[in-house]
Amino acid sequence: MKKEAIIDKKWGTADPVHDPRMLAHFQTRSTDVLITTAAKAGTTWMQQILHQLRSGGDAEFSSIDDVVPWLELPRVGKHWSDVLADYENIPNPRIFKTHCTYEQTPGVDKNDTNTPRIILTSRDPRDCCISFYHHKRDMTDEAKAHMGFTDLDNFDKFLDEWLRFEGWYRNVRSWWPHRNNDNVLWLRYEDLKKDLSAGIEQILNFLGWHITDEQRHSVIALCSFQWMKENALRFTRTGPAGETIFKPGGFIRKGQVGDGKATLTAEQEKRILDKARERLTPDCLAFFGIDS
Image (cartoon, rainbow, N blue to C red; front, side, top):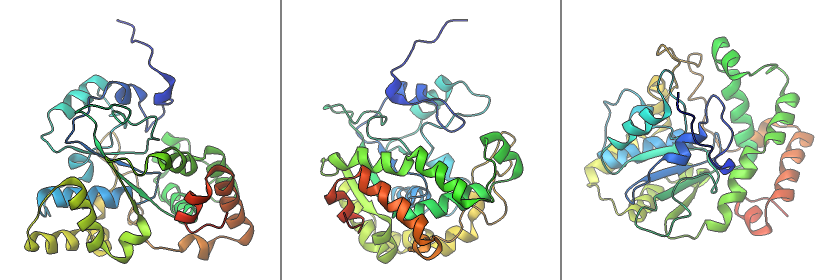
């Protein structure tokens, strides 16, 4: 068997949801749109928004991952090169989700015609933390075992791990210096919740896409929390045999703003915000409404 070439460490370490080889070898196109978010910061919602805008309103898709794939996700039973070959067959404009930092995102350090467009959604770290906790807890026992998730009845232990991993902080810190790049649109989850129509207008202007008024009404309805909750199976990840890896009602949970602040103790909240103050610049903290 031919030995695979060693790739740059910047692409990350392999785990059940991250194949660095796919990032290293992915060929971007100028028409590509990459959703680059920290976990639980509105990723699935933005997948739905972009698919609906691209299609003009599609209520018939069976799985969001079919129409907006997770770029770096390993596919059971398929070699990474075959997955990339499948990606090559997707017609333009292709849309992918990723949880990569700026440094890990394919194509962003190029200054040529193949630079993709980036839509980044961010969310209050307290809400992301609480949402990710329930995300893990709501997995099936088999999925938890596969992912190595244990002891999820103890939130403080989860918080220790969440803070140690620093996924939210690394994502935001890496993208912040590039927020004004021509190919980057940075949206806040809280703003989208407040006025989805305004957010859709920003996206359309950024991408240069056009939809009719009738299509706009359809898109807004299909991107509502109610519609997504009622059709949760379309957004839930599946296992090797096509089985859902989340308990019923577990993936599309609440989608609220302020759930973290209402749930966390004062000490837990302080730990999350103190790390933000350590890792982020004052202007970035202000963007999130965090005092420096």
